Length: 229
Image (tube, rainbow, N blue to C red; front, top):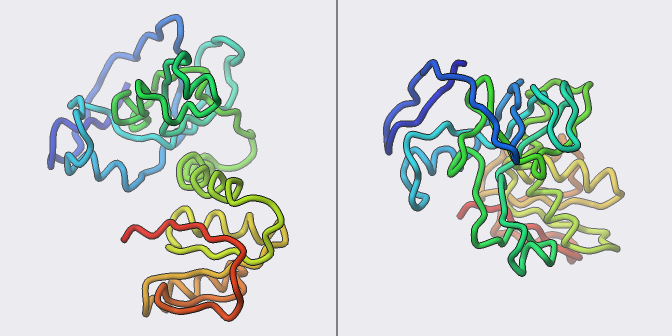
């Protein structure tokens, strides 16, 4: 198979021909349709994450088809693989449905080879069913930025009428239409002076846009903070 491999800090991705990986009993083999690019991939490039096991195949926004049936997954089924790629299933966090806090967690495209390749291995527990219709390149960002935004919106609680979004990048611009669809008025905060970003937010249907140094015209019921600074 063809793969793009990060061999070390600051090095460009290198094209390699590799054997198709053989799944272990607790893994599934996937044929990759598309894989998104995330800011975290640049953290790998810049060695800003601990103990990176170079060489590594990056990519954790994987849209793929099951190449061979495993567990509850059928051959040909379309699935998505996100950042969280494996957990122990035994610690107190896993037992409490907070497996994202598992101390032994392993992450796709970081400690596990990711989706910048024609085939990838994954834990069936962390393969998310995807619809057949939408193009793969449209689904891929939902597996990282989309999940971040949706989880934040869900944790903000019910009964929200006015929602602030601080930082209108990947997660912000994906969660805003979802919130608007639910009847929530969205107030988008960008870097001061980011006229293009604010225009983009208005085009998506946000009620108000402004800089992060501004006060909205009405009191917010909740705020989601995606700002990188």
